[in-house]
Length: 230
Ligand SMILES: Nc1ncnc2c1ncn2[C@@H]1O[C@H](COP(=O)(O)OP(=O)(O)OP(=O)(O)O)[C@@H](O)[C@H]1O
Ligand SMILES: O=P(O)(O)OC[C@H]1O[C@H](OP(=O)(O)OP(=O)(O)O)[C@H](O)[C@@H]1O
Image (cartoon, rainbow, N blue to C red; front, side, top):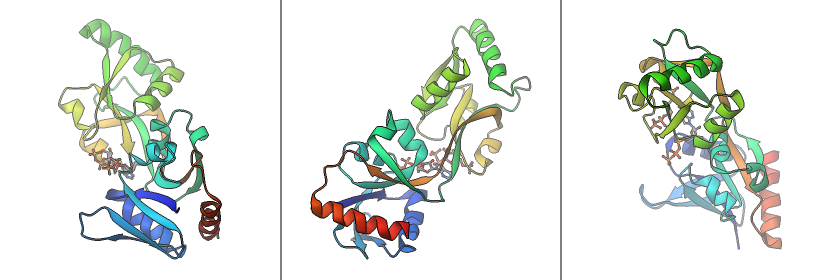
């Protein structure tokens, strides 16, 4: 049996993940046609590449179907309850850096903090007959954050993409999403609450705590990790 390494199959994390491993003497490559999700690992024996959506890597690690996986901190923290019990953070990889934040319309001049948000959310419910809507795909993290902040009068609406557009489209009053340059927020006339940083994320190499390794796989993992940690 071989050690399975799960990496993002496309998108912003894939190429940088390949570069990161290449710098450590491990060559990851896609094989077959552009559309075929098959890959190879050179530079270390006994490792299979598994190409996956970044969003699915946490679940595959938690199920023990891959031994190692690369994905963002945000996705692991969101998708795995008590993530520390299921995965171990091995290396922060220094790319895919982004902040999960809460943002409101720029025109809400009286709302700059969570305390302000708490006040307007109660007033909003009284005025509109429904709770203030926050569009996000990070349901668990936002609920935990707002509970800790004492904000309760809101509802989450699911948004799996183009989240900043939900305010203009009037399907939400505010958003919770990842930002990196801030351009998408600015373009959509949104501002970050001054104490609205929920999580700092970056691409990370994780090890599953849920795999049962053979002696051979343990030896392969040791060799691989020695190359990575050099
Ligand atoms: N603008 C950004 N800049 C840097 N990193 C980002 C940005 N947006 C998202 N990310 C990070 O990239 C990672 C992957 O996000 P992405 O939305 O591409 O994943 P995904 O939707 O699961 O991928 P897929 O489309 O393959 O399912 C996440 O960890 C996220 O924090
Ligand atoms: O701060 P910025 O540099 O502008 O980046 C932020 C944007 O990047 C991500 O979206 P993505 O490109 O993944 O598209 P999506 O809306 O379909 O998720 C994220 O969801 C923000 O919308």
